[in-house]
Image 1 (tube, one colour):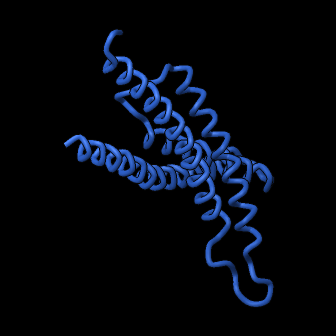
Image 2: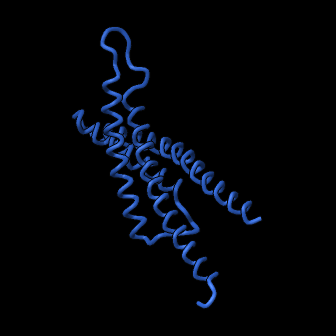
Image 3: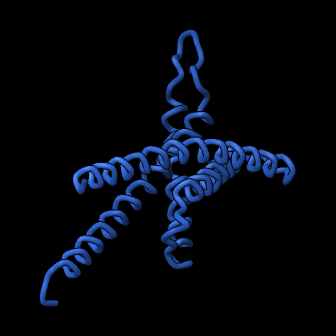
Length: 166
């Protein structure tokens, strides 16, 4: 019976990560596109005319949107860290999301074949995918570290409780 419980716990943990990754990618992509739409409307209504301003707004909008989606997907209500840790994690995810958007744009803008056809996806799609993937990888690493710490704490607690004479 103990072996079955341990196997179920292992399966639950792996399904937890798979579900969060899938939900995180979908939510980060959707909110990244919403962020790009908000950035486009800010560009139009503020009367900016520089291409660099447009790209900066796109990177920021995609990064903030995707980081918000990733943060919501990986948010754990049962084990809340402090407000300071959550704020730092969201800022870190926003920075990583903006960097992922920039890298995705750089990759997507170099995909055009010069002779005949345009790219299959435009650079904005690569920007959205880059920011969604980069923020979810960062959240996954954070979750692995956190689960490893909690697993170590639980193991130490079980060892001290089950040992006689303490």
